[in-house]
Length: 334
Image 1 (cartoon, rainbow, N blue to C red):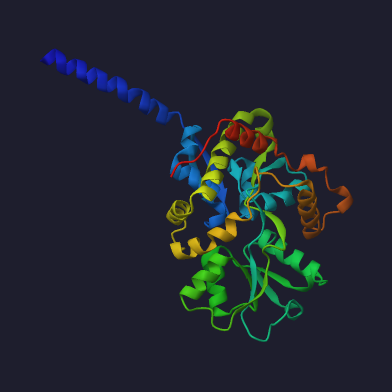
Image 2: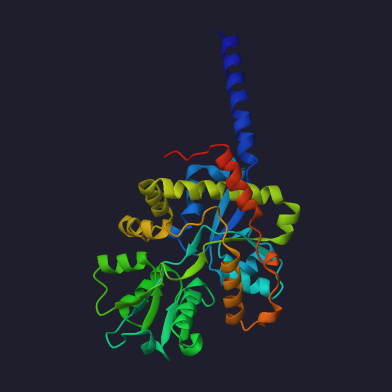
């Protein structure tokens, strides 16, 4: 009997050791997230579904907009930066980064006015307009809208409001005449009876083509740790595929990360988000060129000094992973 107990204990130990060893082998990486919103679902889903663990990663989320995340990535404090558009400013100035993935290629942002006297885009000239952070996709979206309307993009005063809560509070209080908000913000404001005199001036979807929530990496990682980057993108691609395959489950997962946003708001913006998805995580050269040009204008960088697109973007891994997953017949499960 004693011998039997020893054998059973040995078998249990043999079973547990590999599991513990595997857990210890997970590589800890830091991923910067600009907002806990539906358009970041492809990054949240792999955490919840275990796709990152399957690729050998233990993910730490760092809540940081591009203005903070990009310097941190350059210095080596962050591994993957999901504010790719903001990283582009640093890239134009010589930062050795590359944009390697984009899940969305259109924006769903909306421009709202807090007072009834502001009725048209012309009326916002000279006024403060709230964006999430300076130089982010919120500001770029406004600049595209104004430029398309024949209005100087510098005719307004861009004011950084921060992420969801502060942006919503500013709109609810009417502390700024104009603000750029998301459909999630709108739903939250309406559900809390905080719209008051606010009204939408312009809905950017689907008129404005603009990539969102992309991934930027260091060039050194592409050159020396390509397999590591590929494993990260494979997990994200799986999360991307899961996102538009399972609505209710995705809403549930994102709500676990976006604690301050109710499920009703996330559910209301799900359709708006997924219809903007890219085919394989890449964007067209025309959109790459538009983004680089707008970013150069934003930071007053000479257009004739913009580097070739292949020095800013590299979607080879995203396309490779997409092709491999489809060739394997990989499908997400609930």
